[in-house]
Length: 252
Image (cartoon, rainbow, N blue to C red; front, top):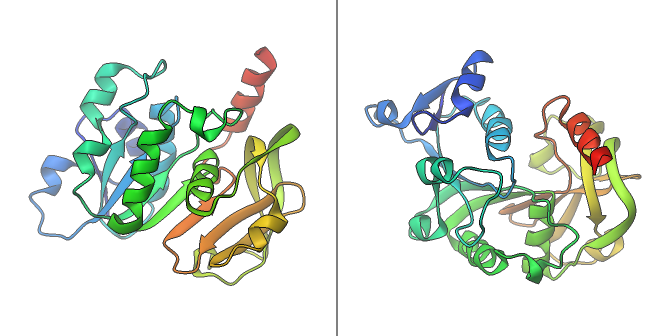
């Protein structure tokens, strides 16, 4: 079944070339099917690339899915055109009275800042509070996971001596449905400057450690009710994204 996306979204051609079934919203409205409603809060500067990564994975399902792309109105994007955001994205005020089956909050290259120093932090916290009662389940990725854990549980990120960068071995340490089908040992990519104190995380009631890496630390955490899923790495990355980031970092 298809992912329902706005007409002329740049990711469309890439997804079609990969035989991902996508459908434009006008056609979807003609079908009498209850689609799942998913919001993607895209905090990454590389909007189109991130859209493609996530829509590729969301499209790998037998369900019809309607996707709303969300951006932070309080942030001025230097890397995405105003026309792209106006055409394909919604703001929090546009969706605050809507219910979603799921939400994805992406990472963002703001790790070295304190959360309160991020220019859109107040807007993001309103959205996180909204998600508690208006979204059935929310997945947070990388910095998005750190922001969610900080806002909901008071767990702050800690700086690493050097950037954690690469593909690392992980262990499944819980039989949560979120890792059903995973091997007991699996690999996942990471690209970040900060982490969590694993022992602190383990002491938090109603929070479960699902997967862990000796090198990368806590990888997947979930709330007891399954409504929050925190992923510290980037399982959504396609091949060579880490290589591009590595070359970018070398040029800095």
